[in-house]
Image (cartoon, rainbow, N blue to C red; front, side, top):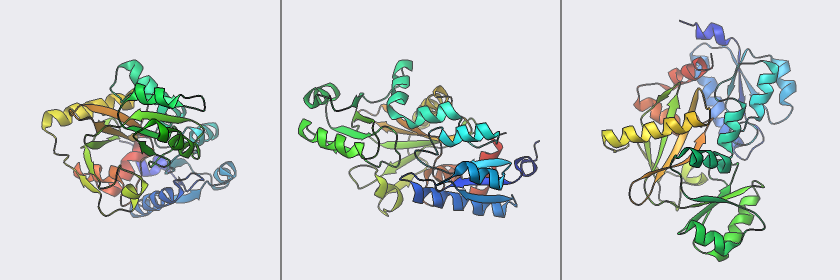
Length: 305
């Protein structure tokens, strides 16, 4: 058995960054650092908001624990730098991270593989808004292709509001996607070192599970066990594992899923660096599987070797 503390050596916890999810990343990194202190793992918190190359060369970590959310930390950028510096790191590699971060290309791959995902299309300044409305049908979710935590997302019911929603999403990313809104239950499945953990069912009083509902609302409820039958839970876990593997993801991650009005599951996205805060879903799922927060941190590190 590998001595993980010895193998990991001095761990650089990469957190903060310059994305819109900076505050969440800071909280995740601090929580991970506290766990490592309890585990007697030597660690250094490294805020990579600027000059990440210089900071990595200065601190010289033997292993990197990536606790960065959103562009720059979850899209293959920091992973590429760590590959260049030959520093082992947690989570998925460059290509898988980039694919998972790009909702449009991720869904293109899933559609090509025959995996269920809601009808979608990319929007730009040449989009015919009435045509978009007719092709997708129903209520439409408009969101940036490469952003997290539901930032820049809108729900529209008519073609007149589509352009406004597109312009709003473009404030966060140059590429914007529209997809059919699903009205069933929302679930998330944590994946840890090749194992799908118990699903979490999400309930919110908000119009959708937005940034406020995720991180600030006391009205959002999380159910784990999910309330699904054994057979339905197995179906959901298997689908999420297939979606995770299809992108080449590794180590740990979280797959988000919505059910439609008939209960059929549809893939939303993969988060390759899930949150590790008090509100985060990955630790909730791990706890239901009998994995403490400290042991979760240890297992995430272990999955990188």
